[in-house]
Length: 206
Image 1 (cartoon, rainbow, N blue to C red):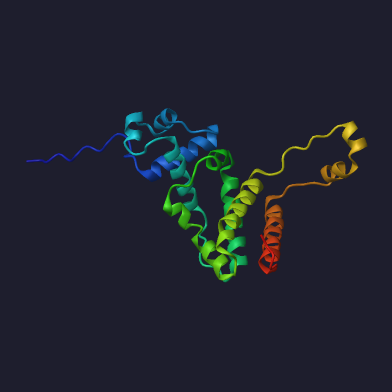
Image 2 (image 1 turned 135 degrees about the vertical axis):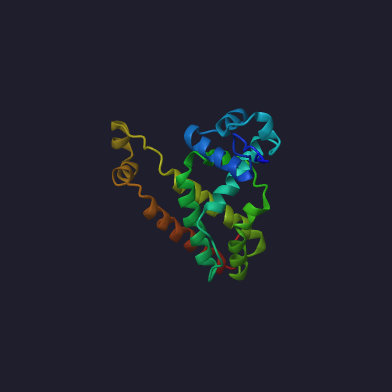
């Protein structure tokens, strides 16, 4: 007697990783993610999607986690300078690949401890480097803001004949500006580390 095998599902089963990947793909293409559109993109019913996530905010948080998991690993650093530089470089490269999701990430709270764990080596390095506990989240936030800005690049400058005549310093900055992401990233790394060094060694630092 021949035993028939169990039929495979026509659509791939949902998982947190598949939902996150689908959300990233959708945002990269359209600039937004909504539950109905995501369900259609994944080839499932909205009810199936809601059986795995509570709503859009959780989807965005899953996308954040997925991106951080796919980011080049940030392991233990020799000191806080290396930790800051490594994280800033890696976040910038990651965000530059997915620029359209940045507005969604900036308005959605980090809710997953696995996302927070990515920053743990930097927190530990800052403590070992002598930074105060009340400064730690400010430093990490500053690195995040820098990575966001670097990934998005410089805005298109405003220019006119009147501006050229009345604002020579601004005009010079426009005429000589160029934006190269690797160069801008290293400039930012040097600026951030230099500023933090000044704060760390100054007894009256905020």
